[in-house]
View 1 (tube, one colour):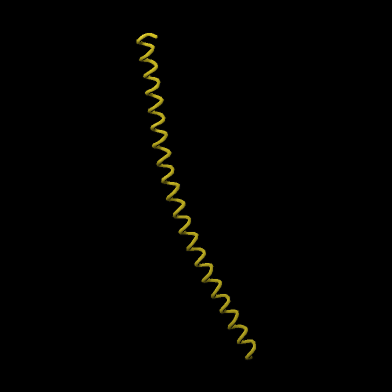
View 2 (cartoon, helix red, strand yellow):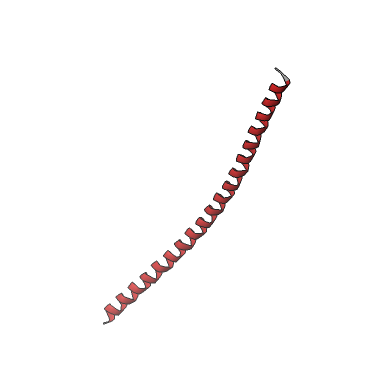
Length: 73
């Protein structure tokens, strides 16, 4: 194997390492972004579930008041 073949091989290896490093960096950023999105969605879901429960409680209270009015009237 000649010196130029070795240099070509080392250059190719270096380029492959650069691509792998860039891919790793990009995937790390994407992973962090996805984790952040997941956290936001979980918080939004919890908030929506709480609002849903509050609405359910209000509707049940209205139904009870209507039943009370109906039975007293």
